[in-house]
Amino acid sequence: MASWAEAVQQELRMGDTNLYLSSLFVPEAKRGAVQALYAFATDVARVPFVVSEAALGEIRLQWWHDTVDGIFDGNAQDSPVAQGLAEAVQVGDLPKHALINLIRAHQFDLYSDPMPSFNDLEAYLGETQSALIQMTASILNADEALECAEASGLAGVAYGLVSLLRNLPQWLGQHSNFIPADMMAARGLEVGKLRDKEFEAARGVLFAELREHAKARLFQARKRAWTIKPDLKPAFLHVALTEAYLETIRKAGSGLVNKPHDLAQWRKQWLLWKAAKSESF
Picture 1: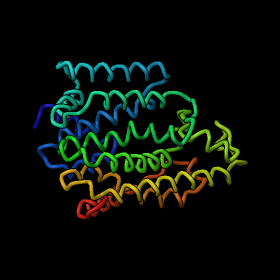
Picture 2 (picture 1 turned 90 degrees about the vertical axis):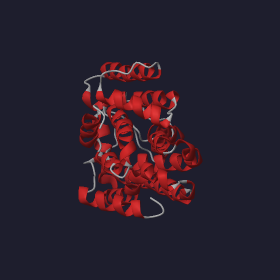
Picture 3 (picture 1 turned 180 degrees about the vertical axis):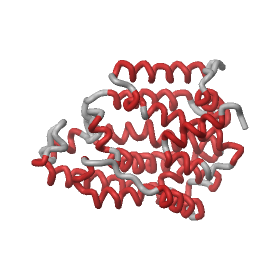
Picture 4 (picture 1 turned 135 degrees about the vertical axis):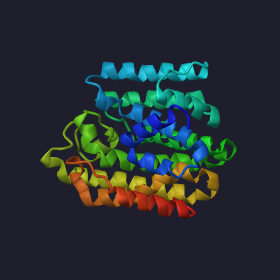
């Protein structure tokens, strides 16, 4: 085991249970590289929750930007995640622009500006969730990964939408607004007043609309499952949790703004195992 692997595995386990559990289905020879990529993405995504102001978040994201530059210049940082990411880049021949774009996309998380439109939200999820799936597939088999780019894009949007919805209270607490402004305006909702009692019915309709978008993208991704070779299946496994999250979100209705919603770990493990044995995800 590489010197950084144990620390990376522990950081991922604490940072993102879904990605950690799905990474256990990756063949051992490449598991460390995948977990390092996941740990990198998780660390970048949690920046808003570990800083007290946007400027400090920008500094942390710039550190990762510089770290990625260093990796491609042959000078990886001493950080276990950075060392592991350097191996992931080598194993998967990961493109620098994909890593940098993921970091830049998360700058949005630091501020209270509303997401302009649903198209902008899909683009954001494409740079973050979809890119993560595609890079993981490249680590597993770089040649075969070229065939599943469309499936990666659709699956990342589906999983990303339910992730934002189920964690909505946390984002509202950070004053981040991922709900597209055009969709809010169409329902007579105002930015910053999503939790107000008077908007309960309108936000319920809005959440249902976003849920339907996620269902559509999941259906479309599954229609492209034939492009995902067996070697690449672990890259998509966490997306198998999307359907269960959709049902949880549906039951919560407008109450999504009150508390985060998650699945029991035993259920996650069962769903991931079941997906690993199936032809889709």
